Image (cartoon, rainbow, N blue to C red):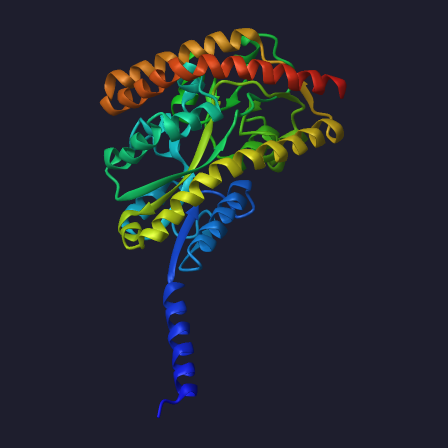
Amino acid sequence: MINLKTLTIGAAVLAMTASAAMAEKVLRIQSVLPNTADEVVMLKEFGNDVAALTNGSLTIEVLPAGAVVGPRDIMDAVDAGLVEGGFAWTHYWGGKHVAANLFGAPVAGAGVGLDNIAFLSWFQYGGGRELYDRLWDEMGVNVKGFMLQPVGPEALGWFPEPIKSMDDFRQMRFRAPPGMVGAAYADIGVPAVAMGGGDILPALEKGTIDAAEWCCPKPDSVFGFQKVLKHYYLQGLHQVTVNADMYVNRDFYDSLTEQEQMALEVAANASLSKSLSYRIYENGKALKDLTDNHGVILEDTPADYFTEYSAAANKALQAAADENAFFAEVWQSQKDFAEIAVPFWAGAQTSNASLGRAFADTLK
């Protein structure tokens, strides 16, 4: 005689066992940032989407900076399988392959006018994703990459007094990003100093540097630059778009089911849109607080900055293309895309900017 009670209990045990087995896949991602950073807020939301799409068979655990290795060692740790995943900005790995700069922070919009939204168009529909997938083999790492978070445009930065021309700018010891972006500043005579975000405010307070950039109103205000400097310039070319991404050990990725792999892709695509939306509102709130409550004055960037920096950026881009075939291929793809898309997008953005400026002027 069939014991229905026994069958029911057995089925429940099997279901629980299967559920536990499904939940055993944990993708640990070490970030280059503390867990309080906005990027990590959005990374955790990405993880929630992955868990929902896989019905809990794949979960993501975000580890803060330094949890397993130092920030600059994350790629090597993921490559070796020391940790399943990492999170940083693509251009962090420009030392491993110069083309990483074109995906992470294409200097001056890659010299062809790519803002953060145009970059996404190139990445998703203009051949960028296919080149991005090749980057890791070109770099020689056992990694699968996922573009997650576009940021930008980044502010030119914070200054102790207004700068009326590049001659004024050249008098400032200026914290700038490392790599190609900072090299372009050095090329136009700005004494650029590279340092981590947490070191900028102490350096400003001690007078080690005079001026600085980091990112945008929200993260800048979290670091507290407004305590020392009051003149803030939003318009810059150095990082018109900056892209944060996730790196998954390829062996771990290959061990996932097709559904789990697809969940990572779908959640990553959703994160691209969510991050843009989140940053517009968060930076808007932060900028309003800075100007309303902290005495921050918004300034207009001198016109000669744009011509000088653009020339230096194009010089750096061409030099890299001359030296590296894959860099040249990626850059050519961006130029081909820009020839088609940028004339339309620039015209549309001019209209959008005028529309927004007209409203912003009514608030003064």
